[in-house]
Image (cartoon, rainbow, N blue to C red; front, top):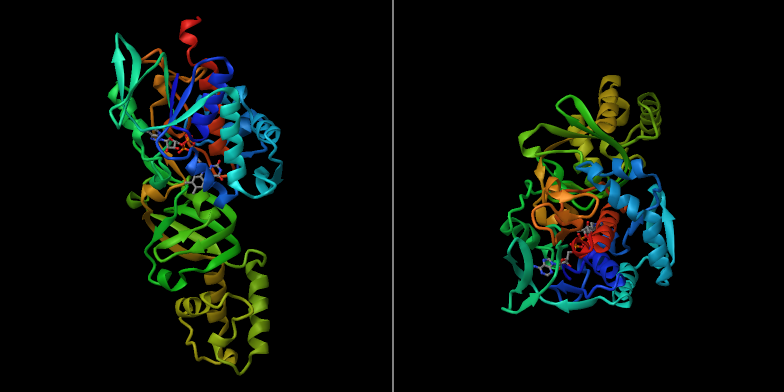
Length: 410
Ligand SMILES: Cc1cc2nc3c(=O)[nH]c(=O)nc-3n(C[C@H](O)[C@H](O)[C@H](O)COP(=O)(O)OP(=O)(O)OC[C@H]3O[C@@H](n4cnc5c(N)ncnc54)[C@H](O)[C@@H]3O)c2cc1C
């Protein structure tokens, strides 16, 4: 068997196939496998989600979640957790059921997966798959970029998506699949930072906000609501909450998406107004711009003052009720205009991929070529943040490994 790609899905597929006694080569283009897994969870690797209900797992996969029913059933998050812990890497569960290694080191999970694949008998070989050789309706060999050819009984394409290409995931699998007749649904970034057009954005670059409320509006319709951390960049916004929000947005350049930030979610409008009255009283004779330091981070103050249309040098005791109420509205509903996603290279996952209608969900086998299989992000499935994307790779990799070569045994 040749498993193309030694990422999360390929290592799992290769290990599972080799464990069944199959002669298995995992072909990885990078000098070391699973480079993308190394950078997951900001180097801590959110390896899965401790969500043990099938329906809940599927609900976290907005595109083609039902396709994963058999894969998730066959290999659940607790199976991932058991496997990693059996490899001597203790895990912990954090907010939102996110599972991380206790060491907070992604490398420990990567080493565990590589070790497991080798223990099962898989051979990891460096090389870049360039083409599939098809004879009499079957894949008979994989041709490598260096001209070498590996003959095989079956092939699994586990090449991942096309984001963070420096990790090796450059989207090669899409072309390989297309070359043998598969269709690939449109590729787009998901879990991606957002570009905003507001003039004040560059001034906020580097500002990170915690405990912020976020609503995403498409015109007047609310499409997402969250609470958490975000980061301003020179082009717009990023950070965990923004990345999650992006998975609920489609083609922002053609839509009218707005982000509405609640900078003071712990205070309702009335309480915030009382707080401002108190602050202004304490700073009675001071300039307005010097009265907000307890309420807002420094970087935000000149921006909010500018948007409030209150003179920065106005004395606090001269601020009218109307001006104050406008300020309350601004702090509870700071609006950012979204004009697009950042480029796909910066996405956490690629949405779109090999059309799942052409893949058997019970085996991960191609419906076009009997000895071709797929697993992981190369398929048209992508999930929200929280460890679900790696779990998709592990579950589909497992199912692929359990079934590859099976066309001979049926
Ligand atoms: C910054 C970042 C953080 C992330 N954090 C998390 C997280 O914390 N939790 C989570 O669940 N998900 C996270 N993800 C998503 C997760 O990493 C992916 O969904 C997952 O790695 C997909 O696994 P895969 O095996 O399908 O693909 P990949 O992990 O991308 O592996 C594909 C492999 O195939 C190899 N390859 C490609 N083409 C060829 C070829 N022609 N020949 C040979 N080899 C080839 C590549 O070098 C690569 O090693 C994150 C992604 C990014 C970019």
